Image (cartoon, rainbow, N blue to C red):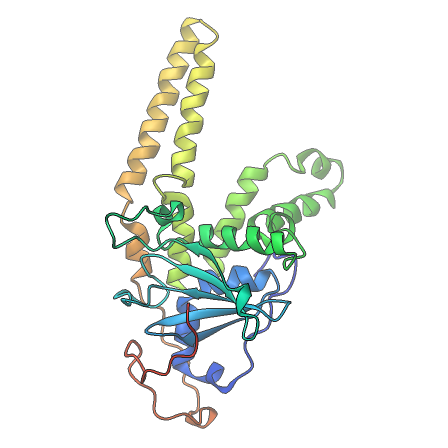
Length: 299
């Protein structure tokens, strides 16, 4: 994508890549595979116990399995489960098995819920957890905050672009880091062909706990408290203006509270027809039908 600091890891090298079925599944998981590929990690879409999973190859020959609920299976569309489970596994070294992330809501009311369960199907929190663990293991050489994060890298590139335009650029460089980060988010929204990824970008804005609108509301509330510290009449008037702004921003979040799911449910334009000769598989099943059970990986 424009603004990334490094090229994406390559696509898988197998014949399924050329089938429309696999391409649709890949698109539905782009909000996971794209940031991982930006970190140089190769990804693939496979069928697990009862649902599609993302397999991520790691430099030490271990791999990650990013899976929706499998037992019982999720009844939601591929790429949009109620939560994610991330495990690290190795084909031969079984002692390396570990659970890295689990945001699937517990079905046992007596069991303590994992902290990440509140994030549900959010991809951003999943990627953050994967980043932290892989850095600890020494399997992610470049911290995502500098090169892997498309928002930060895009902001830095904008600053470099300004620097090329003389003194005026030097004065402006870095002055609008937060605005540049939001512009980078807008660039990603403009550049994606996936409504699932677009919904994930909306989540960054609309999440009622950690989204941009909530943080912006908190910012204006803090500005109001700062204005009050002046103990002048205009300071109190200004604080009321900031409080009104915070309320309007939060009201906007309430108005748009279902926009993310509405975006996620939209259908992408039909893919260009590809010759049937590119696939030697049996005729494809309907998109969301499950193929014959042939488990390949376990959690």
